[in-house]
Image (cartoon, rainbow, N blue to C red; front, side):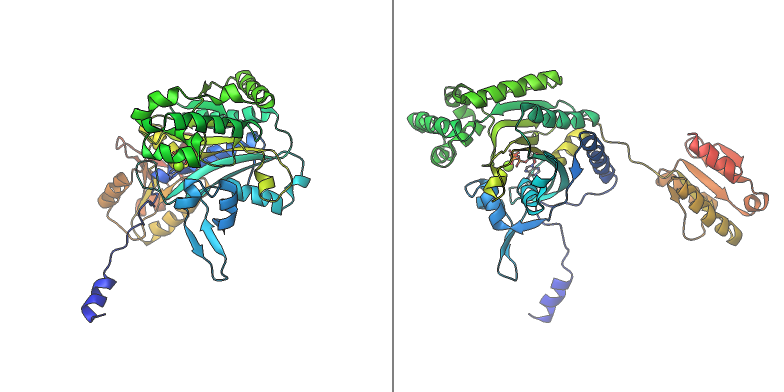
Length: 429
Ligand code: ATP
Ligand code: MG
């Protein structure tokens, strides 16, 4: 490398990698509110938080999510670790939660075990609005115990309660049953046979899926295919007796809980492990990436990962999309300015200001304490820019008399207060 090239290299500006982004204040305040609400609501349903690693052996995802799915075949960030194991950044967390359930012998705990997680996932997709390569999910899993339909309904009720608490607009729950090991393969074969009959009316993607994953054809959003898809056999008419009963009871249990749903026979999930109950929730203001939550039952998954036969159901919420929707509908909290800006002048006032800042912060107020002396006029201007509600003015007079000046920035009014009076006043706001 020539010297010139080396210098140019040094000055290179760095940017976040395509599909990743920085979350900045004040938006992060909304992220925190969403996550705090998740902690609070999920706790009322008896869920405990689990934190699983960001990377796992690639084989875990290949086996759990399915080697033929887009996620595993194209979208994972996979690399060789030093000890020659192949690892991947997690594209989702259900596989890890099931692995942890087995690894920690959680089947010995009172069943079912109810866990939730919050954190980043990684998929190498084409970035667009609501679709990123690093995105965040809030999810929950119920593992072990029975597959009673009331569990499915309660899990769905929990998500809807969470969305309700956040005042998410236009949350629409779509529901389906995709059968079990008994009835689904028969339906898939029937679907494949019917799809072959109409193959030339379908586009290349759907044509390919007739072989690889016929259920995914139902997912198609292509206008030209909609007429044809409407004529295909529906899984609800081909469920085995147990699955049909289970599905009917899930719907009944949702009604009991006052959870509104829409049956959608074309709702299938992109991951292999789902069976029976599947659901998706969409929300407003998101364009075509409007799914904010996907979930369903996955009774065979723990066993597939070499654990004991275990019932399972869960969901994953796309936190980025949830936040986007809240912002679009004006549900984002207004940015919070400082409560108090301390405008001080002089050595003695500085010492008082430092102590006042400590006391106010201890009482929970947000305080800005300028590090160097400023003229009062400049300090007030600065307080305004930071969106402070009050300026506490501390000069020689104030320190000598113990009566401080508090300026309300909205109307410019001033009052004299002692420190206890100040705390009292602020607490009563
Ligand atoms: P989609 O059909 O929108 O691609 P998906 O079926 O791949 O969703 P799941 O794997 O079920 O989604 O994940 C659950 C939720 O996670 C989705 O409903 C969505 O809100 C969110 N999600 C999935 N992929 C992304 C992504 N790349 N960027 C942002 N959010 C995502
Ligand atoms: Mg996807």
